[in-house]
Length: 206
Image 1: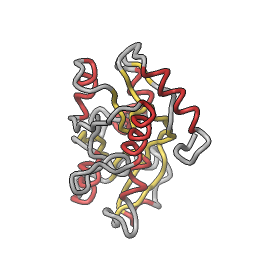
Image 2 (image 1 turned 60 degrees about the vertical axis):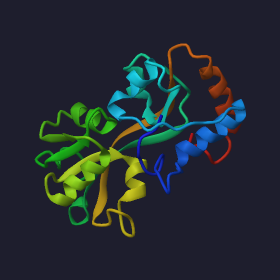
Image 3 (image 1 turned 90 degrees about the vertical axis):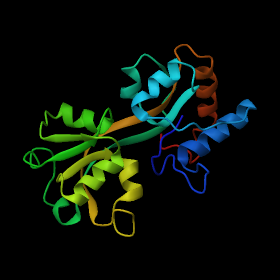
Image 4 (image 1 turned 90 degrees about the horizontal axis):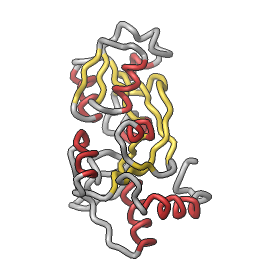
């Protein structure tokens, strides 16, 4: 399963490039099967998996998210995190949540970003559908800042990128990404062995 999330999964001319999709293709080649990418509603990802509509969730899923939803997780394959994004002229003014405590924040619902805001006890927040919506809310002036994935911000925020008027202000969480399979799936051991074989390549940050 996948959702539209640069640079991990995104569509170009009907095809799915991106880190996660290319990694999934390598794993499918190892298994000797043809991979099929199914775009899903992220909030329904676990229902899709449990109901056998998909065989795994492979879209920068954090270990923390998976642990809370009764699935079997692979070993982590990517170090990610959360970062606070603001308008570029404001970003240098804030070093952490304490300094930014009076600002209005956005985060995607049921995401690591919304979890980071919750854990900081931050109440002045707006939950939106996607991380793209969180960045758009800053641009539109609906909020002052957003908590989004670091790899997402690296791909889209800054000079020469889609959101060049925005900038990263400060990190607010660190996490690892894994692939989620149905509980006790035979694919867990197969994937972990595959991951171990390529761990020394530049495919991972671990």
